[in-house]
Image (cartoon, rainbow, N blue to C red; front, side, top):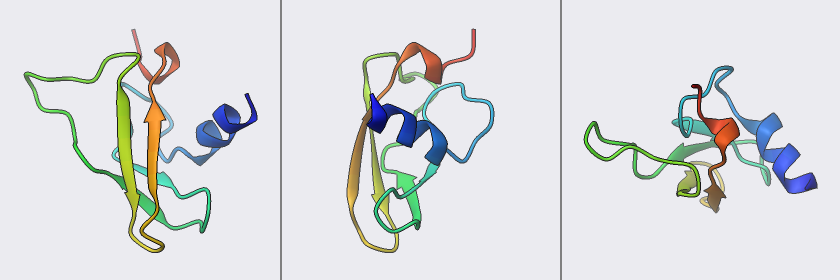
Length: 72
C-alpha cells in the first residue's frame, strides 16, 4: 500500500486520464518518461502496466494502472 501512495505523490499531472507521460523517479528524483505512449486506437485500460524509464539513473518502473488513473 505504501508504494501505491509513493507513486501517486510522484505523478506530475494533476488530472489523469490514463498514465501520465512523465513521473518523478522514486530513486533519484529525476524525470521518468513513459516508454510506450498510448496511441489513438490502442489506449491504456485499468490493469495494464505502464513502463517508465528515468532519464537520469536509467531505472525502469513498471506501474500497474488502476481505476484511479482514469477520469470518467
